[in-house]
Image (cartoon, rainbow, N blue to C red; front, side):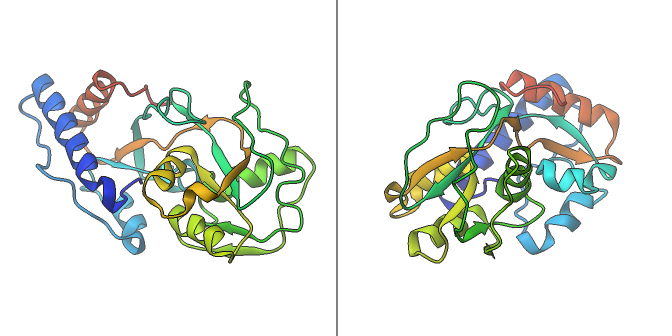
Amino acid sequence: MYDWPEIRNDNHDFWQKLRQTALSLHPDISLPEQLEETSAIDIIKHWQDFDLVFSQSCWGVLSLGLIKHVDILGQPNYSDFPGGRGPFYRSAVIARDGIACHPPKTPSASDLTKVCAGKRFAYNNRDSLSGFIGLAEDLSDQKTPLSQSKIETGSHRASVQAIIKGDADVAVIDCRSWALAQAYEDKADQLIVIGWTKERFGLPYISNKKRDDLTKSTLKSALLKLGCYPST
């Protein structure tokens, strides 16, 4: 889910560490040697594939039906990213201007009642918890409607680019993607975080329900050894 070209090698290195850790626990299980890259167009088919060993998904998609096809293996640690805390993450509401807002000291969202009012809202897709659903829920809790002016971009990175270009005014980006944008997206340093959603469980690692129990339990143990958190 964070397969930016700039960190693709890091993702492959993570799989190698996870694979070797799992094989050290149970040498007889069968694990692919390399990650398989999947396009966004084929991602639902990929997640539902009976042969799926290991992947990462979003709780938004899971809550809309994917959970019937997969088992949760564990939760990544978001503590390295502003807005993250252990297995929990927030999304940053970003804009070209406004008053900078630090992550709240409680799990609740910051005051979002004015951050989207009358502004063009860019989002990756409507199935995304971090890019759409979470903000809509938090605004509803604060008795504030989501902006009527919306632009679907297809990815968090494209949403950041839309704000930079002036095609939209605000977007909501999960804290890890926002850290990636600040590191690798030109002119992202000109944007400001003007709000934060409430804490939610981060994007979980998954396997298909048809995968054998030994492989799944071994991957769960290996993830814990690498600093991840138990599945919810």
